[in-house]
Image (cartoon, rainbow, N blue to C red):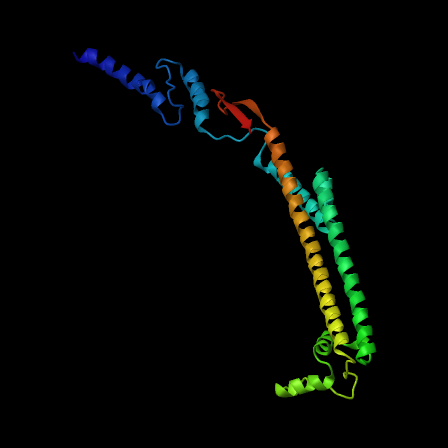
Amino acid sequence: MVKRISPIFVIWVLFVPALFAGENPGLQAGVRLKPFAPLRHVQATFHLASLSEQRLPVQGMPNAALAPAQESASRNNRTAFLKSLVIPGWGQYALGAKTSARNFVISEIVLIGTSLGFNVYSNWLEDDLRALAARHAGVQNAESKDDQFWVDIGNFDSVVDFNDEKLRQRNTVDLRDVNGEDAWQWDNEANRTAFEDLRIRRDRAAERSAFMIAGIVANHVISAVHAIWLNKKAGSASAQNATGYRIVWENTPRNDGGRLKFSYAF
């Protein structure tokens, strides 16, 4: 009885582990090896099956090769940003987005023209109110007066009335010299009212000119950001179109099998 059991036991020890080799976690699920396969065939099959669980780099395309592409994309972003920051629409035109470039250029021209127009109009009103104050209120050296002076003579008929109001407020700091260059006396109420209307229109025109300047700055910044977005969008589209696959066979160091590498770009 012992003589019959021993050979069976030996066969069991030698070949049963091979029967369950397919349960190895390193092998592909559902793949089992033939129990009586030669050792060379078993090892080759092991390498092929183990590929499904490994994340192998694409041969000939190391991660370091991505650095030049990233540097190029970053450089293109900076170039597009700076172009559109200097001249709105320039970066868009360089990227082929001519419609966007035209819109930014038109916006820039309109904003600059509007700002200049309000500025010129404000200067005209400034000249008119100075002339009116000199002719009908006796203001001297009108070119040297600040904005607060124009506000004061638009609200009071004379420097005496102004000083009386300040004294009622117990404010002696802002008193003006009744005999100096800050003195004034309107000849009638209508001219003072006309002067105040000119001053208000001048201030509004100056504010609108400054508002247009803020719009010009915003147009430059928006155009620069939009150029970066266009460049990244174009890069994403190119990456989506660059699809393909590659299959490479690689021998193992012991020459007892090999590995089949499969890469797919998507």
